[in-house]
Image 1: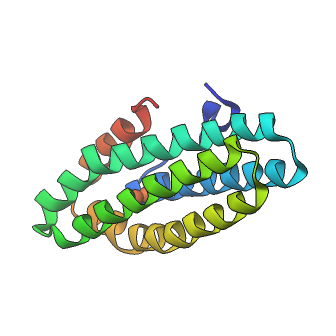
Image 2: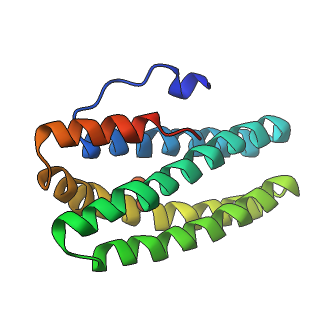
Amino acid sequence: MSADTANPPSFSSVTSYLEWDHRRLDNLLESTRALVLLGHFSAAVTSYGQFLKGLTRHIRIEEEILFPIFEEHTGHSGPTQVMHHEHQLIHGALSAIGEAIDSQDPRRFEAEQRGLVHILSAHNMKEEHVLYPMTDESMSSSARAELVARLEGEPE
Ligand SMILES: [Fe+2]
Ligand SMILES: [Fe+2]
């Protein structure tokens, strides 16, 4: 287990856990960017690998666990369809960034990374302000605690 996930704080809601994970991932991407700009490509590959694993897991637990619960509890599938579409855009951007690092091309990295940050910042805001709080509010506190524990326990 990496240092970033060794001692996460404990969470009482989907919103607080997944917001924390968004910030953790933002920091990993920022570290990767700093390494690329310094020309430390092998360290950048390692850092980006952690980011990629973490974000892939984050998206997977949203799609497989959270979104079905949101749809069932709220009766709405519009918001999750939009999030699903944005996840596909995110996966595309992740591949392009990986290629830029592999080819040791800082300029391409900057362009692709900026594109990802653009998609992610709006995406994360919608989740943090709408989807996560609506999911939390749709559940009893014991069901919510069970869901948070399940999300936290999901492997990479
Ligand atoms: Fe998402
Ligand atoms: Fe998210």
